[in-house]
Length: 240
Image 1 (cartoon, rainbow, N blue to C red):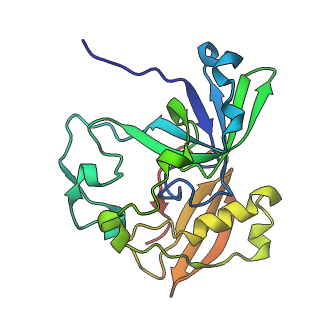
Image 2: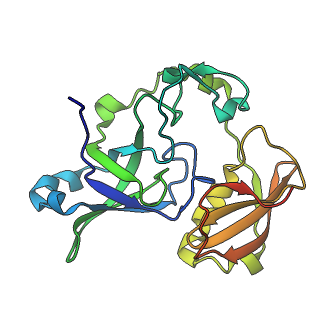
């Protein structure tokens, strides 16, 4: 008998596509998300006491990664995309089960007149519409391990780019979302194995297509285009 998990909610974020989403939760706390529950899970009693926690775990469903078979090894992007590691030593979405895990800040619990209990979170690394399987409280006394080893991931130092976002383009982004998009761009959305100075990339964010180039560790935004009706929702290269 095949076991299945129930989808209890969906999260709404500013990312309609995967390209540009931070590689881990918590890297960009300015990113906001809103978790709306399915009707059968809107009983307020299920949320009693949740507002006493500052952070929560989200167990969610990877989208667009389903395969008929699984591979024992994967190529982590942060290793340049050309070195294989065991799937269980990575956070790759290509896994035996398409389950993701994220730790996010719980900003508030809202009792919405239409949708019932709604969770407002920060620091989520999820695409808009991602299905949520479960929510658990984050317990610092047991979930935090300051002396934990990072494996090969500790050898790949994260870095930030300098971001040049001219005001003529930045002013098109809603003011309350400007810090978030700048923080996202600092994380360098490009695949680690791509470093071509004249290549233009585009990140879809909050209804806009933010286009940029990267040269000598400096990211320069060259255009912002309203992007409300794009059919393709895949990270892509704008120009060769």
